[in-house]
Length: 201
Image (cartoon, rainbow, N blue to C red; front, side, top):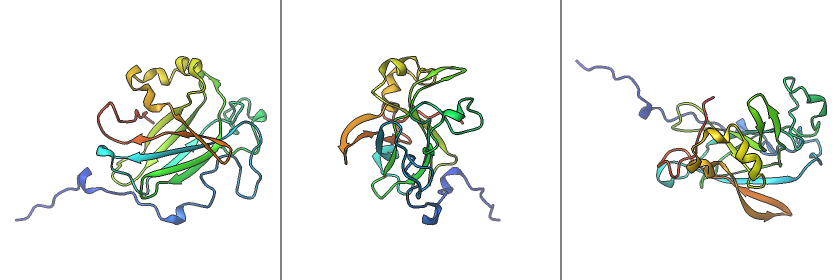
């Protein structure tokens, strides 16, 4: 008699996303839609990075979604008490996918910090990563080297062991087209000295 084996995590390699899941310009957070002009409030920056698995293997077609506050530290969302002051030309959300090298890019604004019940939040961008081999999405938050004092006081960054905090602070990587470029690489799994710290959703 042959027993039916139940699928395990090793047998689950999805999800897979068709290219129709994306629209041109989805990785540009600086505008509310592709027909609208980009926001002129704040500094426009580029976020470049690479998503890899254990051993540094690139993750092809991983999906990344980014969301953040505008340059003034506000969200155009009903739960933000200062929504009326939010940048109307800034969407604050974007989506992209990785190429064969695991590379991705977002165009966005340098976010502002804001007050939260847990304490003052340093400027940051939240990222969701989904892809083949992941049983559920993972969440990362990236901070910027421009704000050392605010980073040191951020209640979320302080949840991360001090030895691993550098993994979630982007690095200034030069300029492209007159815009500052920040590098943020994501290691999905590996030695604690290399793996990106992730947060529970």
